[in-house]
Length: 192
Ligand SMILES: [Fe+2]
Image (tube, rainbow, N blue to C red; front, side, top):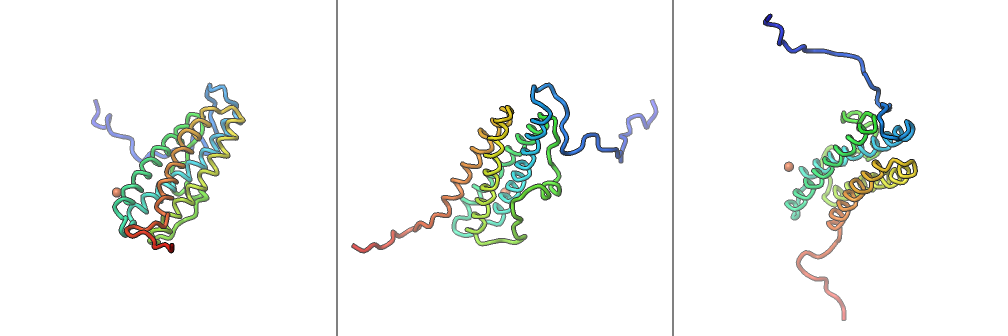
């Protein structure tokens, strides 16, 4: 046995073997066009989910003020749930024979969620930003759920309805409740 028999073959570079935006043929009883359509819709939602995950981490880190601790923890919980969604969506795209968007620079080209400032905003502005990102995502997800159902892609429809839409809706509720202007200690004086 020669000493270089177990040498790893380093610095290998090759050509792309499947282009982004194409789908391979798999025996799913779903047409090429259906799988192409679903993969494309899912990639947009996947890009938005990856941005939303990053926004949750950013705001988890930058949180401040009297509700720092609960928001710091809540935003991290939501980030973790988004990370699980990201994996489920990406693996659905691969299941359809497609290519899931993965590189953050590619993600940035696809998402329509507005870029936040690099610094910190006031706490209510950071929370509103998260709600607006959810709103964009939910609009996409509802439309994609309807269209994929019409095309008979029940698996994609189920992922969108049972996981993407429900998780995002629940997160909207939890964030929105922090934007209710309710007194912390003293009830408001009333005349009468
Ligand atoms: Fe953390």
